[in-house]
Image 1: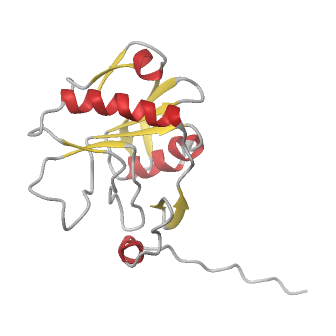
Image 2: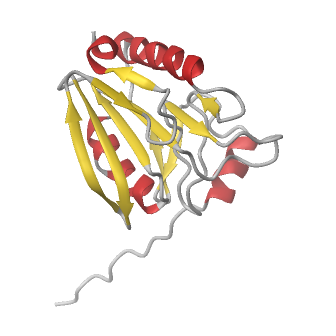
Image 3: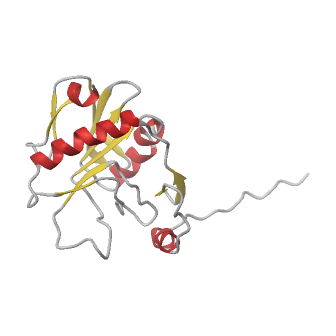
Length: 184
């Protein structure tokens, strides 16, 4: 009896993924590069969009341009094999990100419904490994805000869950979020 050799695979690298995108291969698809794999984005509905609008208003009002730029659904080049597109992020102000995507963020927010497993699992590991200090998941299935802080390799040392109260962005304390108002 012969045993089959394991299938050998290799990751897709960010530069390859970006080249495919520039050539139009993903023109009709919403995709992200996560851990070397092209992942189709989850279909999200109006509750997802409503929370992003509420959080956008809070962040744009609280964080002056000299402290950070707000990205909404923009790429974040966190490793050679991962380029997620978080729902919201705060990145360092720069003269231009025209020639390269930002590599880190002081705050990343994902709004999770259909994407819950990925946002709380794979993406949390990727953001922690990339050193993102403040990662929030607005979990619409459980009506809570899950805050991840203190990255240690591919995990966060501190994970707290909030159904009410006010949570402040770690590096942008003026970015105070009334959890109940965001989840309404």
